[in-house]
Image 1 (tube, rainbow, N blue to C red):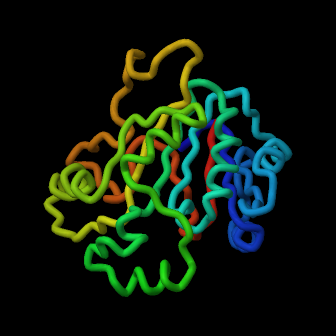
Image 2 (spheres, one colour):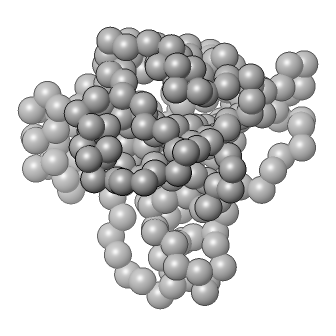
Length: 223
């Protein structure tokens, strides 16, 4: 799928060990990188595995941010701030109004288990995403939620499924020095709707390199 582009799967050490036990014969350009976001240096771990930060990279940070404290989020974003211009980032976050209990979106048991239970630690309001990214040299290109998932991925296939409102996807681009991302040529949407004949998982963006791990605290990078 990636050709000869190297891919780096960042995950907790115990998950990486389990993957290595089960995934025999990984291609030489696929690298499993053990990292604890709370304590390890992400940059050192990736460069030690052969990652080249001077190259434009596609970062996928899916189903991770809610498990981290804000300090760990900002530490990761500081690493991403050094990414090459033109790099892309897609990530998910949990809505703050769900996290603080203002709107449970019909998912009260989930809130009790993950928020009250202390499993999730971080959330954002949609309006907070762009300022947070801008602070670290990134620009939001698109942000989507349940309505967009349904319109773009389910209805074209005639599927009637309920999509959760509590988690949103963001696509961002690393700024080019001296060029405003608002005036630069805007590429097609990272969340573009696939042709109706193509079956695509509803909550995964089309056209990016997805993380293959369903576990939390994982990040994939291809550059």
